[in-house]
Amino acid sequence: SPSLHLPCNSRTGFLGKSQGILLRVIPAGRVGFIRKTVECKESRIGKKPIEVPSNVTLTLEEQFVKAKGPLGELSLNYPTEVKVVKEETGKLRVFKTVETKRANQMHGLFRTLTDNIIVGVSKGFDKRLQLVGVGYRATVEGKDLVMNLGFSHPVRMAVPEGLQVKVEENTRIIVSGYDKSEIGQFAATIKKWRPPEPYKGKGIRYQDEIVRRKEGKAGKKK
Image 1 (cartoon, helix red, strand yellow):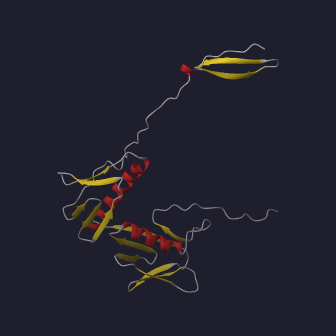
Image 2 (cartoon, helix red, strand yellow; image 1 turned 135 degrees about the horizontal axis):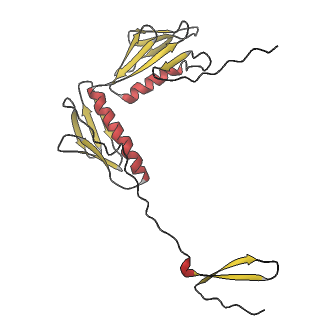
Image 3 (cartoon, one colour; image 1 turned 180 degrees about the vertical axis):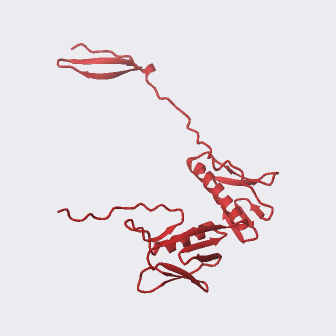
């Protein structure tokens, strides 16, 4: 069979036929790659300024921030991907030092964490829980939270240092303090003793929590 001479700047494609082989010539100039620069979008949360109340004292040292207020003192270490700057207006801003996906994630996260420590030492946070169930009740005895949750014995929990616990009407628990993460952790530990069950809704739930209910098993049809 006669040989086919193809130009060096061509590519060939194979098209099967019932008889013989057909070669299609594709000029190399029409084949290539499209390069597109992908830019990380700036976090909508990260670019918001942080208000600093007059009763909060800040200490900024490179990747370290310390906030001291009437309720306590908290500090935060920043990763190398972000930095915090205090403006002439007194507000704080968090900036990215590099353009990477991780830096974009850290931008919004550390802006939120910085705002939390400032609000925490100046105003504080609280988390509210509700006891739902016959005989479920809670009291505060000294530095302990004591709960009757249907077990053979009451549940006694020591309140961590820096947190305050108050009980209203024997069924509403309020955990307050200046460290938001500690408040959330202790509230989650309380709830873990009796998570709300889906049939009657009994258990410990957050005040704003919506418990999805299930229908019980229907009786046998006659």
